[in-house]
Length: 435
Image (cartoon, rainbow, N blue to C red; front, side, top):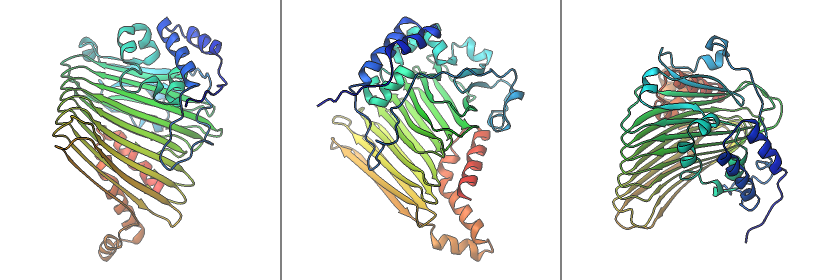
């Protein structure tokens, strides 16, 4: 039974927003249709986490114009420290909802690489954006929050890599929030055509807080035949932002996607990271680290779905819970009927640093095929006293010994980030949160 709900958003407001930004007619129509579908599409239901009072669906038409950065020297030090120091770096910086800075090397432009604000891309490259925007990876009607996102998205970036183009240097995007009234509905769309390769690294960083706001963040990654995408991310959104995050990949024959995610928000967060291995020989690897503090409530679902034969999916999730923080870690490996010779492996481990902290690791295997390999491991516990004793016996103070154990526990993901500045930032965030 479908229940229809009344949404506090008028179609006229959506149309006005779209027209004010000179969006193409197809995008305005998509927004209006998504709004209509949102009223009859159910909310997501994260396992063991009640979100009915989070008000994640209380989204509204929102666009705050900010001044672009005249120079990278005008960036806040926290942002400046994230950037790849290479002179020919390709970087997009969004300030609240405004595309504030963009550089793309001439070499990549000459090869046909597109890297730009998503709304501008919808106007300049409609044949690409319309083909892939919320059609294959995250369909509009996945849930109510994705439908509302399609209707209301107000920022994001489009990265397109043509066939046979291999990009050696990482592509960076930094999404800066320095206005405490910003509701951020951001969309990242990455398309890697056949035989291409790219490394993309993004940061969400809050520099302002003081008012309850909403985050609705969706990333879609389309990986063509024999293409490779490495996707790194560090999220550091403020405690005032309640956030829904959906990062999703669609991988074709012999394609490969590798995720390295540092999920360090200070507010309540629902995160879905889903990899769909549609092609034969497709490969998906997800590495995630999480640190929860204060009274945070978080739910992290990582899922790899095998459709193609000989597909390989790996999940590694490590979380640290402190104070009265609580987190659910769901790792799901699903092998569909016909996906013979596939391999699904997952590991989820949670380290709790205080008696009030709560962590729940749930490894789930759903197998609809016989000729496959699958395995899982999960653990929830305190700092290993044997490791602690060993380090202290070498003259290391207890506090420092605990710090070393925590960093070693999270290192498998931290070390995967391909930009040294971002890796350093994640290390510093972990240091701050676990003190």
